[in-house]
Image (cartoon, rainbow, N blue to C red):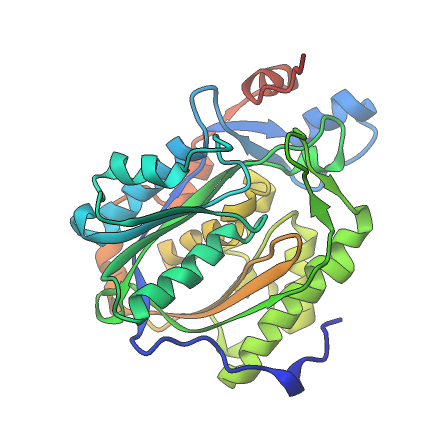
Length: 359
């Protein structure tokens, strides 16, 4: 159930100058750990798994390297000079350095800067969409021509914890710019946050903690449904007005249930629902789902995207695909290409890759 906020809603966030996605890119590691393999280790195979498998970063991969790969894919589709990017922002809850930004490494690696804004964003799983919101404001105000917003994670769960089944690696990058250059345009956005401590990790603690069933209601569902319904209320739209809908994917059940409660059909959600095959990539979850949608979208398609971050909050976006989407085809790997490129690993390899043997 959503909060009754309709009577006190501020207007949707809409910039003076229309802003859209000029280029986008995904990156997913090739390694896959099946959910049944986790169950084999911890429950002797007696329990099920909330997903089929999850993507696992390799020994030479982290948020920085994966962000660079996704950004390069976005640049291929945008076909712009990276030196024209005015801001590089990376949203993640697993930055490789506690004190040293990921964003500066990414910016220099792709040829952006040095005359840029660069920062790392945090808000659990909606750090990436926070960067998108800020990008819309920067471009919409005329302060920048292009920005790069990334949502990327190498999420971890405590060994044997329920999170371990879904905490995965991967994400997406978006180059934002003026609407006339965009393959998809933001019609409006709405953010909804409260102090709901459903998921947290203290400094120097290696694994996050969570509130078990509390993470569903009043955490995930309250924020996702509130942000989505408020945006549609103010946009004057209904679920049937959208071709696609994509929600944050901590598992398969949560986004499917949220979409159903809002009135969306399984067909509207199927393209962006990737959790079964890659797990929960945290800050890049719904952003990665959006890349899968843009890979197959047609001009005129309308998309509802809603993020969720523990702590807690959601960003909702109304997006319309333009004719320019056809110019992005074949320029970079599709998200489904990364999903299909898989090498299955066992639990022991996963433990080594993710550094789970602690002294």
